[in-house]
Length: 116
Image (cartoon, rainbow, N blue to C red):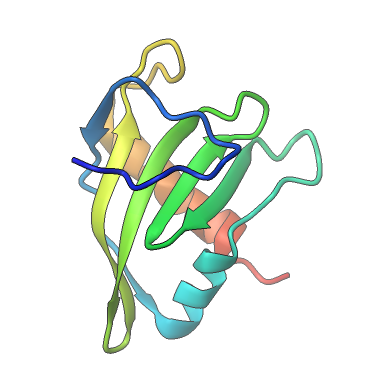
């Protein structure tokens, strides 16, 4: 399973697992997601970058890539066509897929789709 090429500042994990995250986005939401997110304060612990169809969620301090989503364009916007989570225990300790899916949703809603 290919994750594309992570953004240059993200450090990919040695092990990955399918995340099973599903979501549909409007065209406007898709554009917001493609802008990504770069933290401006220490409390903002995530960086989100895009490379082609892939969206990478990396820890801002370590640059470890934790989540990756591949978006596919649709007639109304985009949908998640593939999703991955790090299972490199040296980079990310969670093994709970439900928790991981909720966290990705929170990151999308809180950092990518929120108003400026």
